[in-house]
Length: 544
Image (cartoon, rainbow, N blue to C red; front, top):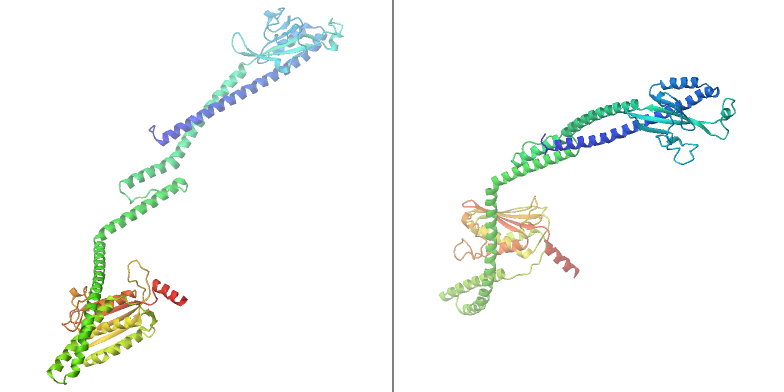
């Protein structure tokens, strides 16, 4: 394992933590065991002291030192007893298993005696915790010493064999020295055993934790690392395995979801790249159409200003010419050359006046008077105006009107003018026997005439003729003011422009399809319900 890897760091941290913990645990256990064993030895020596005092009591009353010595020798033969001795009240050793010290007097400052003889008057009662002492033997090893006081009881100072006075409370001391070698050996043995088990536990726990970390932490992290490297290299095909439902599993699931999202985005970008040229062409076409619409609007605005100026300049002179021509015509006899010339002047003057009137209508912002109207009725009324001229030209007119067509919010006069312009153009387009078809229907789908506008339900008025048709190069110009393909004297080029302006003012549009030699179809789309600004105006008028 490399020192910088997570597995190495976790292993080191776990091993260090367990080692410190087990070391502390071992020290506490060894200390506790050593204390318990020492306390057990102290209790054993105390019990032995009491037993020995009681066992030698009778022999001492009978003044049989040999018997006391025998009992002390037997007790000293027990395992762990290093030495047993008896001291009289003056500190002289009168019985001992260590013969060289018999008859010696123990110094008051000696180990074990100083506790009672710290003052001039020795203590008569020693606390239990001070009866025992632990010290090191000269030859090595630890020893436990226990001193038990032999008291002057009534049976002692009343016996005939003794000369002890009643006021003497202490007769002597029983001192037992117990070897702690066995306890120390047991402690060391247990310490080694605990250390071995601790090391085994540390090794086992470290291996278990390492396996656990490798299975549940290191392996998922390696999966994520490998997935991230594949992702950075652009490989979005292979997902990382989800090995569990924990936090790593959730992270792997989120990572896979991100990979799938990136893959989908990449596919979408590639698709966009493949279709970019087509979309650019479509947007360019739409932009050109919008530019054409803008140019047409600018033309209409400029023509409107020009028409208003020209109409006002020409209308008054033409009125004077027409008036005086009528006066002079009345004075001329019918059938004369002068009368025919004046009739021609009057007819052409009226045509000029009509053109000027159309210019004024085109230039003026006439206030629309909208209301719900029956489109079918408007079509039928307008059709009667050209029915007879069409019949004379051998043109049949048929109508296919939807009886369930709802009322439409329009200005009746303006829409009638639009229909009349369309029918007139259809009639003029048919040079020989032909047919004009008028249809009305409700659009099956809601549509919108402006970009980004909400779709609205509409009605469609179709005017179909079997005339000469319009060349494709002229289709983009037919709504331009003064553009016409008719012969001189048969058209001004304002009819379609005016019609287009009226329909767009209603929130609708006009579409045209044509094929040279086959005919032309004009489709007029009008919204059924009023536009928001018209609706607000209607509410204000009703409120007033």
